Length: 68
Image 1 (tube, helix red, strand yellow):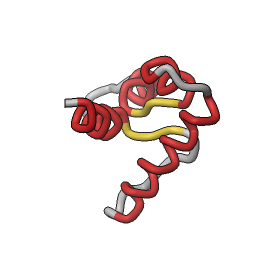
Image 2: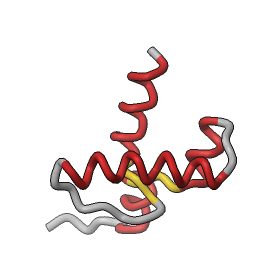
Image 3: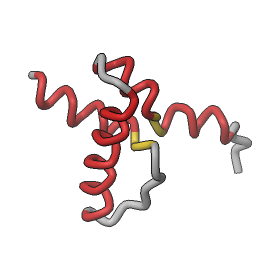
Image 4: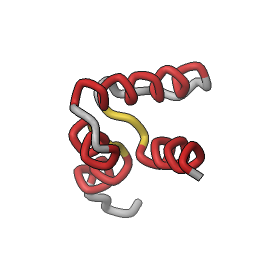
């Protein structure tokens, strides 16, 4: 089995409220609400969620789909 740096993987896999806020230009409380909405969608799809963070790829997909 390959030796993985879990902290590095975790940082790349999930995105938190401060980074969401910076990317979207919103306050942290709004970023938490956005994360909660995305996590609610993921939970309905059967994914395990982490409160206060969301899956980075899903966030980017949803944001860019709405912008494009």
